[in-house]
Length: 134
Image (tube, rainbow, N blue to C red; front, side, top):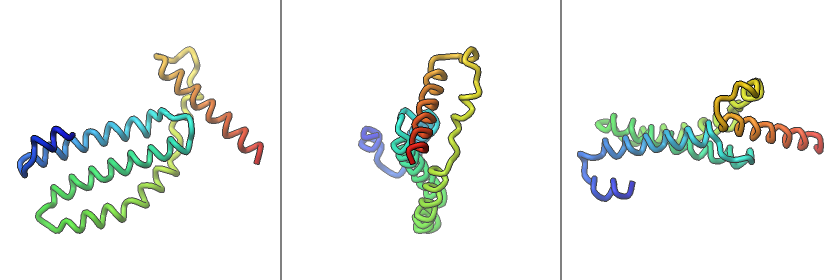
């Protein structure tokens, strides 16, 4: 990105830079929201929220660029209004990995699926032990 900002300065390269930012934000969101590499639930939720905010910011930059003939303040206000909603949606999102527990062990196609199931089972065990101690 530093190289893109250094050599692609000017109004004619803004669309390319915004496309690169959006593509990078989509990759970050997918990696941190769907393929969370963290065992700690709080850290995973934090990074998922940060990746979601990054994607939201990239989308609002695109919308601001598309509607650049009108005022840009509307995009900033829309971004600010959307922040709390986005955080609440991401933090209250149901864990999509519950379906991993229903998969028969013999039907895994690769090692990543087994690793994801083990990670989720460890998370369930820690939730259960925390609920028993409270």
